[in-house]
Amino acid sequence: MPHISTESVKEIRNTLKVNFPNFKFSVTRNHCSEISIKIMQSNDKALKNYDYEYLQINQYYIKENFSHAPKLAKILQKIYEIANKTNYIVTIDSDYGSIPNYYISISIGQWDKKFKYTGKNDTL
Image 1 (cartoon, rainbow, N blue to C red):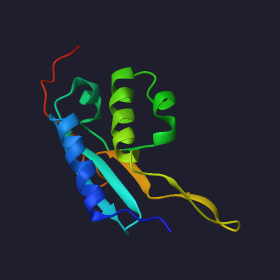
Image 2: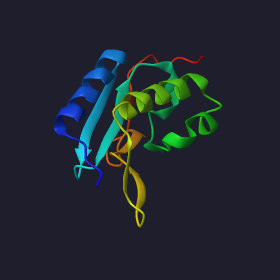
Image 3: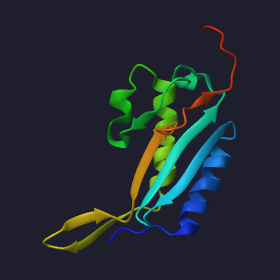
């Protein structure tokens, strides 16, 4: 059964803070089986156009979905790599097959609180 500990979530949160000092994240554990990472605030120009919305990220298609924004794709891929570092596949039995140690959810903003861009709103 998937499970992520509070200590693992704390370690991922701290690693994200070190790697992305200009970002504000919400990193939480959901139902002991999922880590939820939400980018809530940043002054990085790669996120300038997301000041008005909430966007769920499919971590398996980051490069394909953000081919128009390669810098943002690189940021999201790095966030996923940090979150996935301690994840591994667990084989339960032949009926259920293989499942991850825990699930990962990434988004820009939350469904009830939009992402905030804190940089200058100048044109590129």
